[in-house]
Image (cartoon, rainbow, N blue to C red; front, side):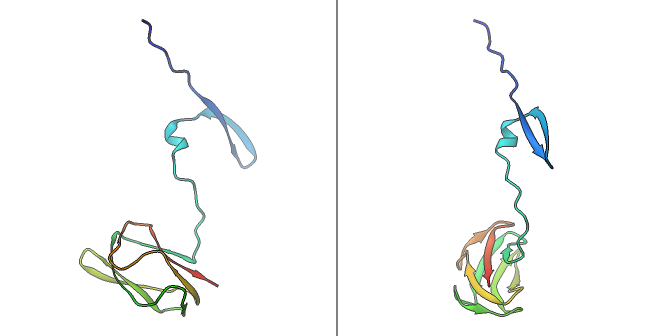
Length: 108
């Protein structure tokens, strides 16, 4: 029995309007897609645990209000609202969050 050889799978990628033919790997296909930074979405800057939430969901917040406390490496980190708006929480007390996990959003 002869082993089947895998043929390389080529595909094209469009970068700034120019098409390039290249080898497409499974790792490339499964990569996390680029997401543009949204300053209204507040993400965890360090892995930790949500100790308390000071403002209820769908309430108005003002710039500088402490929304929640994130414990990381035995340090209590206050996470504040960077803008005025309506709060949309994505976590609850006791949640263990990873780095860059969405904590809350500020809606206009």
